[in-house]
Length: 229
Image (cartoon, rainbow, N blue to C red; front, side, top):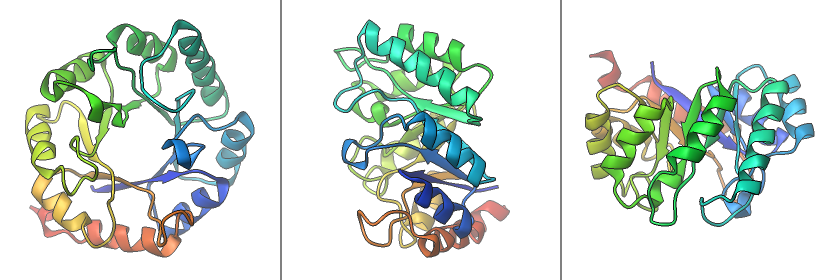
């Protein structure tokens, strides 16, 4: 079945996502930094206020995705925090200076995250060799990959999303994200053959998640004839 994940930055966003019929939230802080780890209090309060699945972003700072040992220690502690607060899954991604997947750091974080499912986030869109990176992400055991197809938006990245979906051969979930709205989600779904989608569902950019926009996205993906075949 198709599934809609909403990128949220506050408890208000999460409530709007649930009211609109979303299946899952990705809980972050700092929209200006494109998503950082939310506070302990935020994670715990959101968990108490919503019933849908909650995945928590693990990202200690903005900027690149190359992490020092102290930053890795922060991420390990944040994973423990998120698990204690009832997270259903986690979201992170780590790269090396040359744009490759940092498999050493990722494995350490995955070990700490176990048994929760983990999404490798849009750090992937900065990878030098996406096909090779996908294989490494699959081998390490990530549950899904969030990507815009290495373009500013998923709509612009459809060609790479198609290739990644074909390459994955159902070994991992490819989840398009970036600029997805009710007016393009159907085209992205049909052209890529993907069944999970990631959006902030903001009616007006910067105004937070909008339940009506979430509901429109849900209606679109639930009625795509592609999924009935």
